Image 1 (cartoon, one colour):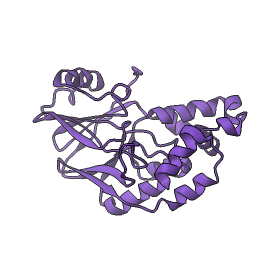
Image 2: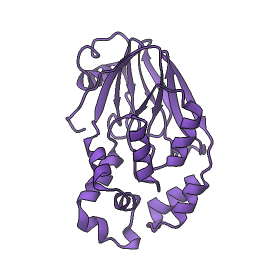
Image 3: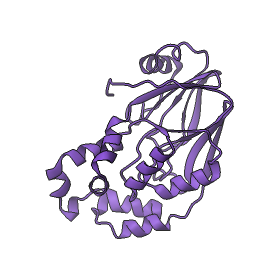
Length: 251
């Protein structure tokens, strides 16, 4: 994992936080969640705003307008890097065209700079609980033990967050919504993906979490995916691994 981290401390209490991740350029799912949770006081996003979806510009605009606190995901990094490689970005055949090409070609310099400036990790306090948010732990691994939790927590946080009694980590990346307790006061959570599931999970709803006065609630909302499918059908993408995935989840 990249060793650069930026820490942000928010001293908050008695509020409602919306926790999202893996938006993947899906403004439809994002707006459906906000329609249900617009009483949220703050929004935290665990990365992957773009790639594998047709509305990257709209997704970035939405999180900026709503002042969401975001960290950088691997797909955010991928799209930004491709944007900087103009030859690879524009000189690509239809047979090799990916969602990253589609998204990078739709974004402008300011939006790419926004993705590039996103921190890899954010730490904050809410309801006397310390939080650390980052996109992933180690590829697709999850934290298996309290020992590993403590090791990672030490790397991700600084005082006064580091020494708090109640510790919670927020991850994205796996697209699997869950809350995993390692002790009564130490856990990690994943809000799941706004945009799509893994192949073994048939749900096509937008998944997310809310935290209200320290209470965590796992939620999902059904939404109209037809605009995503319509745009996807008109987008030139290589079939295997790009178009077929989008058709499966947006169809």
